[in-house]
Length: 382
Image (cartoon, rainbow, N blue to C red; front, side, top):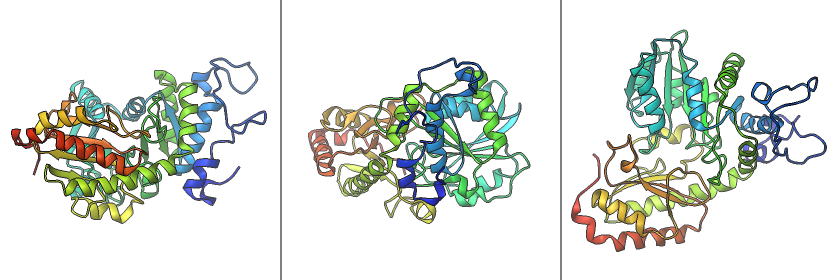
C-alpha cells in the first residue's frame, strides 16, 4: 500500500482510499450491506464497518496523517468526542463557533455532564493557561462565522493536564490548509458535509487521531450510539475528495479577490477573511496555514433589512445555509437560532467554483439594488 507521506496531499486525494477495493474495482463502490456472511471477517455493519466506509476513512486518514473514524454527520462526530469525557469534566470552547457545537456544549453543561468555559478564539494566552487544567479544549479554526484563526502551534504546545485533550474543528480549513495532528492536537473533527464532500448532497462527519486508544473509543461510541455513516454518503464523500484540491484552489483564489473588492466597497462596513492583511489573526494564519480558505464574512450598512434584501437580490450566489460546495452560497447568520448575538448585517459567503467575475458582478448588482436601505442601520461590530 502506498505511504501517504510519500506523495503530496493533492496526489493522495486522488490515489488514496483504494486499498479496500476488491474484484478489480478502480473505485470502491457503495456496498449496500448491513449483514455479512459469518466467517468472512465481518458480521454486521454497525459492528465491523463496510469497505465503503473504510475507503473514506483511509483517504481522509492519509490527508490528516492519522486514523479516521467516520460518523453519520458532523454533529455525530462532535457528540462522540464529547462522549469521551468523564462526568464533571471541564470543557473550554471558543466564543465564536458553530451554533450546533455551542448548543450541544451548553446542553451538556445544563445537565451537569461538564463545566463549560468560553474563550475568544484569538486569546492565545487564555487558551494556553486553560490547557493545564481543562479536560477538553475545543478549538474551531478558522471560526464560524467571524473567521478568527487560533494559534494552534502555541496552544497545542502548551503544558497540559494529564488527561487534557485538544480537539480542532478543521472543517473550514480542510487538511490541505492545515494539519492539526502534526501540531500536537489529539483530535481533528470534520463535517464532511462541507468541503470534503463538496457538492451539497450528503451528511457525513469524521474524527482523525493518532491515538489508537482514542480511535477505539470513538468506534465504540459509534457502535453504541448507532451513528454510522451511510454507504452512499461515504461513497459520495470519497468521490468528492478526489477533486478537493482543485475545488479549494479555485474557491480560495476567488474568495481572496472578492474579500479585497468588498473591503473597498463603500456599502460594506467590515470584511473578515484571514488572507486580508488587516484581519486580526492574519499574522497567525501566515505562520502555519497553507492558505486562507474560501469563506468570507462581511457586514453591510443597513443592518438586517439590507442583508436580507441582498440575499434576495442575488442571482448566481444561492441563498442557502451550509458551505463548501461547488456553488457559492450566502446567508445572514444573525437570522439563525443561536446566532442572534452576531451583527445583524453580517453575511457569510461560501465561495464556490463559478467564475470570479460573475460572482463579483452578482454581488455588486445586489449591493446597488439595495442601496436605498443603507441608511437603515449599521450592522458592524468594533
